[in-house]
Length: 334
Ligand SMILES: NC(=O)c1ccc[n+]([C@@H]2O[C@H](COP(=O)([O-])OP(=O)(O)OC[C@H]3O[C@@H](n4cnc5c(N)ncnc54)[C@H](OP(=O)(O)O)[C@@H]3O)[C@@H](O)[C@H]2O)c1
Image (cartoon, rainbow, N blue to C red; front, top):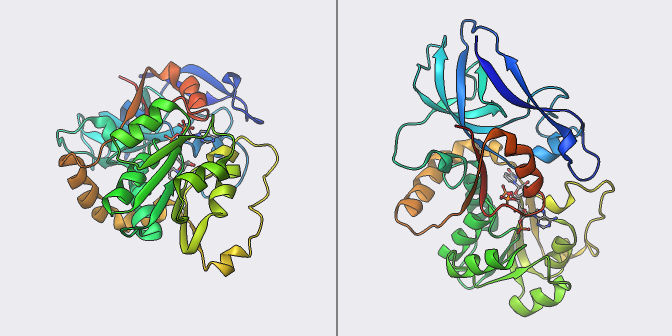
């Protein structure tokens, strides 16, 4: 019998997530039945989409169940298998519990071959957030040389890749992040032309006018809220908005109205496209080839924040919603 440490959803949050929304517990896992495997977690990805899943809101993914372990994209090692697709010792990735060990039916799990890259990279620069950036930038924003692209949460898991892809396409890239060190990294390492601190800058319109004097041709939207209102008002004719997320609104208890002057969508012939990366897995091979080459050649830089130990996952997740992570946030489980 295997004992597992796991973190369950103890309470649904109202407003900011608080520590009492989580409970760590030790459970005895049931013996495997045919088709199941036991996976030891190695790295757990913490992502903004987990916040809406903590509520009862119906969305593109079902809510987390109260009293049950939260789940997340993970890398793990098979320790026991009664599933013919997997053997003891395989390294796998897929959705696992926020837990030391998960009993899994194998659906949605895939093996990772040893490629020399750190395991955590499969959750970041070679994984879902980077694929999100690649999809939104190459399929929706479609930047061209000479255009201006704006990326919010510019140094986060998604934003850091989105901004660099726009720069590699020859565009001028402006971003924002919530900390001066992040802004310095964005310019010096990721090659942004400019990056402003959205926590200290009070007048988003004025700073965007200064940094994007020719207007904005493409917006990779991660943050939403008042920042998006300011960006929306500065879109150029035939501008493209890849609406990826709205993290500034995930903890709001009352919805914020959309930007004023929505008729600008018509006047400026804007394209605004929301997207969910999991709808586009057919394009994964293109992403792996293109971004894999950029990572290997050192043309694409990435940052990650690694938190050590499952017990720290709740605090780290609350920090993510306040900008305490720098780059992809992962929890090292063992
Ligand atoms: N559509 C999809 O398929 C898909 C897939 C993955 C992610 N997403 C979305 O993409 C966005 C970025 O995700 P990520 O994985 O890259 O997360 P992340 O950037 O690694 O972490 C979130 C970051 O958002 C910023 N932030 C947090 N609260 C904020 C606020 N109130 N105002 C402004 N910025 C705030 C913080 O950075 P600062 O220090 O810069 O404030 C924080 O570090 C999120 O909206 C997420 O939901 C969408």
